[in-house]
Image 1 (spheres, protein in one colour):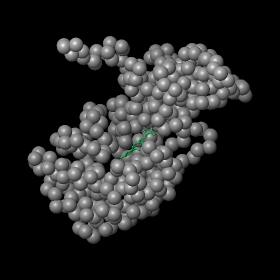
Image 2 (cartoon, rainbow, N blue to C red):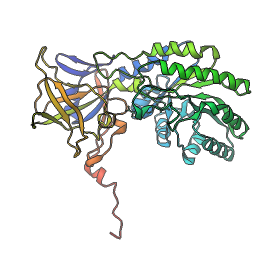
Image 3 (cartoon, rainbow, N blue to C red):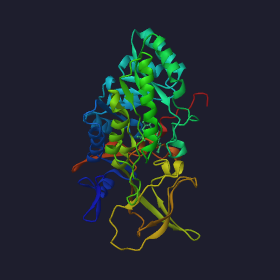
Image 4 (cartoon, helix red, strand yellow):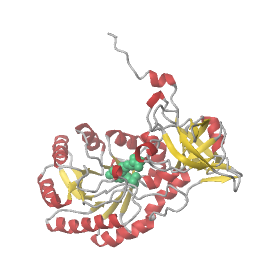
Length: 421
Ligand code: LLP
């Protein structure tokens, strides 16, 4: 469920007409709904009601500070994977003790910044990383709370590029070696073991792989406790999938997920952390774009938009499907025609959809890519020197630009021509 609905024949974000925002901001742009972000966060929070828990939003999904503040004000913690994300979360007002630091290649300067600024825990991904954290913590006179991310070797049954829980993936420490790694952690100075971390992939549409992984985590918790370690916190990662089409997809709900967590891990009396990204932001955002031309090709018709692969890379990168809808509601029963929907970038990969059945559209019309709130704006680039796509947040009948479109000078002036050239 989201808050992008047709009203009087016009797509609205909450109570604002999308066309009015387009007129004010220009296209393309990302548009988020506060009510949808709020609702999705609360679904997770409620799913774990009665269990000691913290929902740490995986801010890689959509990291604008206005989004972070919206969620942090509701009580969210953050899952960060870089020094930049850590700084952004802090800038948005998130306290260090609500920030979980994940990521397979944390650098010394990133670790130092988090130790100095405060961090809830590091989710350690390798022994060398653990040794560096220990060394830096000792040199700063701090104690670093850690979990070890274990790789449970389960198949998440998702797109290969976003599966992380198989032994061939670069993530985590093989679960079979976990006891040995925790033993070393316990010997290292400056380190405090607080729990276990696991994340098996993204866009999971079945709870079975989670359950397999969490059963293994439950077993490991008991084994590590027998070894004398303090396992009081379980970070269960993110990954719950969302429907990308309105029609037939029905991935498990956060409440189903919460019930499964209680069933598999409830008896361990641990604090539960989860790191959802996509489910909170995905259907809370759309990408709005305008039709530049309609071009008749050899046996196909191209809808050329002003949005491109640099603005939304998911179709090019993962063959991802996004529903694309006209901003003006088509008349009921209107004839649909196949279109190849493309952007202006000079690559054939700049194709959002092939043979997509669409209602009649004309040059100048607005369209919206649905389910674009997660891994949309954050993965945008300035390829082809196209300005980084702006972001807008709606709340009730208000909207605000939360990242403005840079002008050409801002982009060009970032380059420096050396004096010897
Ligand atoms: N925690 C960790 C350690 C992660 O690596 C991720 C996502 C998450 C949490 C959040 O997962 P989510 O709840 O959003 O599924 N760019 C890809 C998705 C990459 C996901 C990377 N890790 C896409 O557009 O589909």
